[in-house]
Image (cartoon, rainbow, N blue to C red; front, side, top):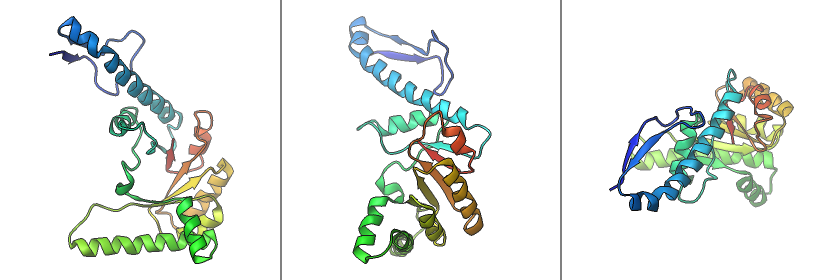
Length: 219
């Protein structure tokens, strides 16, 4: 029978000593839940706060801060909500919410087809598009937009996949100089494709990465 009265909204900026709400009920009940509540509030507020620091670091650039699926087991929806409270954006909630072609997928495909990683990336995007069309045809109805993203780790891979027009290309562990070249390449070939920088992102380098012109930065 513990009652919670909220004094501040989620996402509010707090100062030390701020009161966020009141618990009311039997002392025995409050003491039995206080540590659990503090664990949730502390961890999720920490995620929101760190997200806010990243968001503030890239203000004035076209870049948005995204989370990943690397969440605490059982906490995914809560932690992704905390990212939103901090001003960030959510990447896919689960594997079934978008197609993300990763480097291990491409390594397998290149081995199977006995081709280069650049060619494998191009084929993978093409096959995913064909799969999307098949799913829509089989359903016989309008489906939510299916997002197709592919991870690349070189500019030669990027050039190949841009010809296939994925929705998003994830640029893995590229330096700011490489990211700037990637943005110029994208602008020349497929300006509608969004670019996402990922890997090795810190508060110290996120501003430099955002200023390269990428639309998304996943942390």
